[in-house]
Image 1: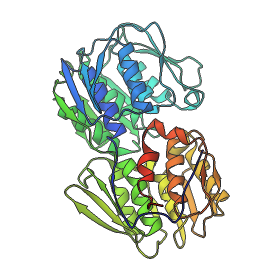
Image 2: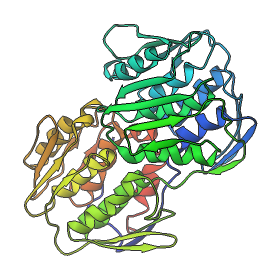
Image 3: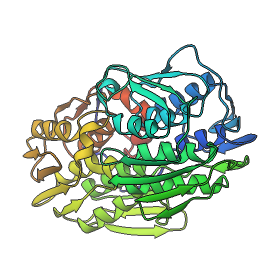
Image 4: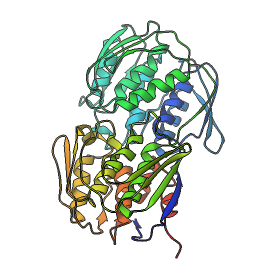
Length: 424
């Protein structure tokens, strides 16, 4: 439990955030599939990425931490050892969805499981897709959610269709495993994908490792088989999702915050959150070494499609609580299947702060007002904790329960956050 200090923020802050969680997951898996030793610089070592790392080790991949935020991964060219124990992946949706596809390359059965919340998160669309290409895969509870059993020894077909309305991670898993199949894959996306920038991120990582992909937008992908992931040295970008919390602090507190190491040309979808804040009345400066957000005198509500920036929805909702007017956040139905039901969680906690908020199946509406501090339930969700911590900078008496849940993606968040406070 942490109580947030309000009205105590420096007029100007320079912030450094860790490496991208999404890039780290993908680079770990690409390195594991590679033909030799890979060095990953600026890797994020958080609860989620360490779960992916541990699972890869269980599958026979040698991984060493060579220095702070640098990993050495010794690829097996798509060959994995059996794991007598289940691969435990906590509540990391990225880990379980990407690794479910990768396990299909193994010659032995694998079981992938997580915590209680993970057992409620959908994965059936990926299971259905794997079955189309001859993989034996099933949800052991027959409810379309983990635990999952995967056995790829009968891998055959080369054409697959997949529904990505719930998650683009299904597509990412198929793309990552496709080059190490014999015949490659032709992938047709029948619905979605949501969170499209994450697909671009996957393809960018694969290209860096020497993999070629033919694509037609976000619907048709063709990946030749027997391609080699190239070993080498790779660097993880700073995490744009984590940058968003500090830009939001600038907006709410009318201060200036520069986040180092993030650039507007990044393929990370959340980099565009700075533009959302600009539409609400902030000023944004794109610089070679970072992006600065300058809070304006008055925040204005807006209507915005956040389908490609789902992780920023709780943060935007926190900012919207301080804006004039009613903010409508659309195309976000997939947030109900995240670490928590984020739409309901955000609405519930905003109401505690005296803010009118409600959600439908795919929208979140927030009426700006005069937020007050409250005891915030995090639902075990790192993004709820960090977003409402930002709101507490301008709402006296905010307490964040279960504050350690930020370790899922940002282990030193509270240290960096406290760096925004003035002395005394």
